[in-house]
Length: 91
Image 1 (cartoon, helix red, strand yellow):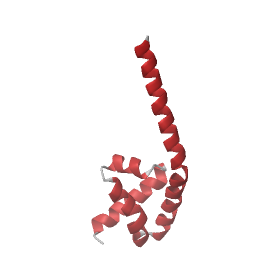
Image 2 (cartoon, rainbow, N blue to C red; image 1 turned 45 degrees about the horizontal axis):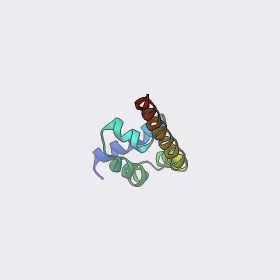
Image 3 (cartoon, one colour; image 1 turned 135 degrees about the vertical axis):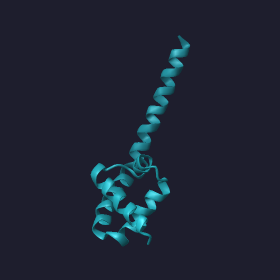
Image 4 (cartoon, one colour; image 1 turned 45 degrees about the vertical axis):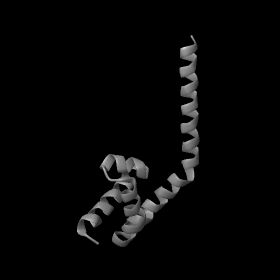
C-alpha cells in the first residue's frame, strides 16, 4: 500500500474518533469522495492500524444503526417545510 494512502487512512480514522462524524460528513470536510473515505475506513485501515480500525468500526456501526431514524427526521422536515411554503402562498 502506498505511503500516502496509509497516512490518509490513519488521518481519516483519527478524525472519526475525534469528531464522531459520519462518512459523508468526513468526506465533505476532507474533500475526498464518500467512496474513498468508506473504503479507507472499512477495508484499508485494519491493515495499517488494527486497534484504530476496531474503534472506527464501532462508531460506523452506531451510525448504521441510527440511519433509519435520521432518514425519517429528514423526510419529516422536508414535508413540514413544503407544508409551510404552501401556507405562505395561500395567504
